[in-house]
Length: 302
Ligand code: CP
Image (cartoon, rainbow, N blue to C red; front, side, top):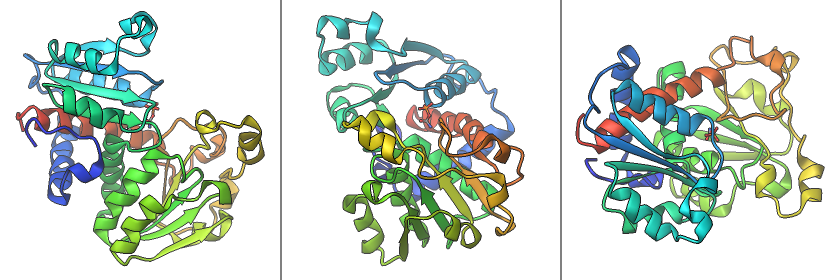
């Protein structure tokens, strides 16, 4: 994995993904190791973020690394018309690894082709979010004791949800049964479904949330993403399709955990937060350890 960019979750083999999770377990026990003292991590966020950028910066800071970058482009030369190619080639001169989020699908792959340092894709449009995927795998393994043979439900925006696309592909390696709950307009794209079919795994599609709740080990809630809709009227029609409330959780498996990549808008009521099955804030914390594992693996330090 040394010097290897991470653009799609499929860029890493199953063994490499498990290796990252194993290293992350060590970092969870001891996150303050000064392994990055001589390294510079660049975080280039062309699109808003709270968790991904700050958990990368937290991960690098706990390891003693230096961070450069931007959280929006308003104060950068992108405003003067500088191309993505030139921005990446320049920042690669100033850093050892670049973490990048961009609204355009394929932009991270393009960046990896012009960069002299590894690129970590922190989300490219509706395409992929591989570091979220690794922290999701970590969270599932930690709460279920295994990744194998689970029933996992994905709820909400399965069409544009890049976290869903990455995680479905990764879970195909682990004999998962998929329960896909979405409005008809936001079904999982066939380009992602094909991975399930190729593995000959079972998947079931629903438009109602209630019927999947008693069947599954993981409920992976997602936000209907306003920013991906070209027609605001379409968004208004389906924005409140699914709202998980505490009183819907009376008949669940004991091991059920509720995950969400966050941010949430109103798809999980705040009254769920105190339910022992709610795991989304712990999930966000796990992102620090997983990103420490990724940075040190890519820099050849672990
Ligand atoms: N999960 C996630 O990507 O959150 P942010 O958009 O806040 O980074």
